Length: 331
Image 1 (tube, rainbow, N blue to C red):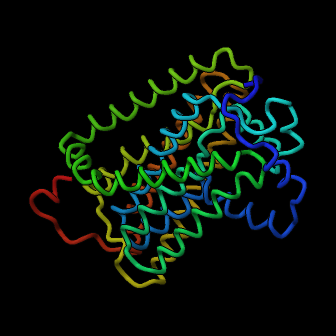
Image 2 (image 1 turned 60 degrees about the horizontal axis):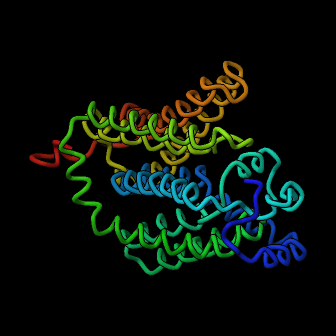
């Protein structure tokens, strides 16, 4: 990742942005940059899951995580370094925290993951809701989340344009083929689905590690968070449907807000507390540390998708969904 960029994108545009950053815009783009992070999607999904439509929340989680994984594959295939990496000035030109910059420098640039995932996630959400205000909100989030990346200096503008195009294609594919794929997936037992998710996660991480063995920054460890979240959601959601099956639209909006707040607190608290515990158990970049990083998000997904609904029903903060029959009951 120290060679000249194989894709001749316009670094002078990023140079111009770097020279004209202003505090009001920096605050704005930092805020929307958060929406494009994994934690930002957790926040949105938590609201949809706890207060509105849990099936949509699950599909959004799978879509976001799968898009991030596809983005990882495309970045690895194109192998285009981020701006200012080739000349070694990234540490002074990127407007991100040093610890975040250390992770980003281990990743390639094209296409932008924020633009690609944001386009897929918010277009799918808007198309599922089908309300004008949601379309407007979705387009605003897509635009500002994508543009935040070149503003912060970590992506070329071309990365964002490519990401938007690919993400829009993913949203269309999900809307067209998501139903048949879900029907095929649901025909298998929960144990089989969980085994497949864990095996695929391990295989992808091993392949990633082998690919990055000669790269000094090492493999992009954020991939472990994405794999853990996806595997955890695929494990927990069907168990919730069978064992709890809470109704996210039950009770009034006061209780929906309570459920949302509790979900966010427990999920983020799980991530933060496990991060501290696991850092003491396995500091550094060992294989054990990588496995624990995956486990952190896997357990956080179980907390959000399974433990929280169980808590809601147990304490009377939500009702169970009406009994289902036939194919619905088998899912």
